[in-house]
Image (cartoon, one colour):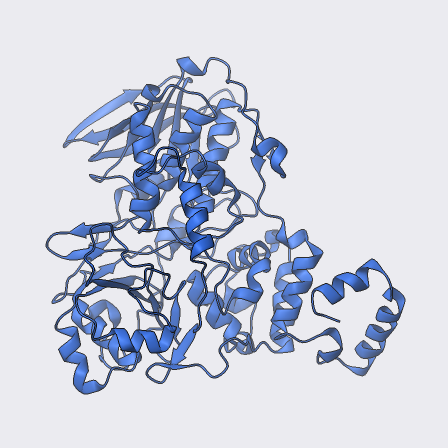
Length: 589
């Protein structure tokens, strides 16, 4: 396996791998990573679809890429993934998947056209004081000390950040900045999260520093991601005769570790309550999604909180059972045990059936929620919310079957250990209606109208105990390599598998690990698009410097006398050169 860039390899079709028609694949988990693995096996590995088997413990595919209508509760979305133009493997995948409406059009085509016609742009990123825009919204408000701390983290080798937390490398000045408010609420970082992952994010998305306020770099699907992305993938795979087996729990995968090789020899599973053993040979590939952020999700409704009691869940237990066999299979307990209390676990879907709330939303967003265009273009954060409540409203309708009068709002609270400002309870203890009332209070609905409006809303709170587990402080080796050293037929995919430079909690990471797994196990001779090289592009780094300092040129920076003297000497030296041209282009001169 090797990485590539440019379109030479991107457009090439690899040769058919040797003996692939005599191989089989068993994929554990039908989330985005598992489905992508099956597609790459067919498209690039040229494996017959009937040789591919997908085991799923639930009764439907999709994993965390969900969106569903429940007849008793209503519409439910547990979350949404933000996407951008440089998700290289994601778009490589979806260029090959036809839409359900028109087989002549790919999912990428539909996505591309839609986001050209209706680009993301948010007028308001942060509100406070019951619906008022933050006075400094649009400014990053970073002190020089905070910028220096960011620079120090970026320049620190990842090998020196084992188990280090974000709040161990940044001071209070950083956490008081708008940058942190934008950054943490957009990506769901908590102060206790992994500094290693924070560093990766800073390097990976340096090109988006200037768009943190308006979120113009983001792109979104037509409907919820289950309907827009997952269903076309399932249709593609079923059309190639891939076998889906639902309501099936994989309990363990036995790995023989003799002769310096690791060979999966047996899958132990439970099907309809009956335990079975599936023997394997070296020609049987096993691709496992290890761990899950949405495992053990519980659901409440308008009148009931989502239950907080839960079992560990099969995806974690499977990883534990595999990891006991060899240290190269990772340390699952680092991610799902001892998740801090002050974290995000709750998200709530609100369905409004009248327009009483619309004027308040229009006042904040500047958009008509029923226009069919993106409304919030990502999250709007309520700065003075004890829960650090976030609001996201996608294009309406967000579900194909959604009625014209219905408006769907998705909420999440990053702090689960504090009482609300209007409802004096922790978000985890609240019913759907109470969460709705807290939301209405913060967007400026008069108190005497809050209960009246909330009484007409269907609200579904969800409790996701592991939703922030991607960001748990980690060390090298805690996540297994996509293909562990010496593995002949076993691979791990998803956000708990390790691939270099890319960032978790993204659709790109899931698809990248899937592509890497298939290409390594089948020895596919085609380059995998490397992670976008923004951190190696001088223009993007200089552009980030301009925005990190709230649009100040080099001469406007808070420099010491010695630094100013050195800057002038440098500028004199580069006058009339290409370097000066770049600095001018990036607004630093």
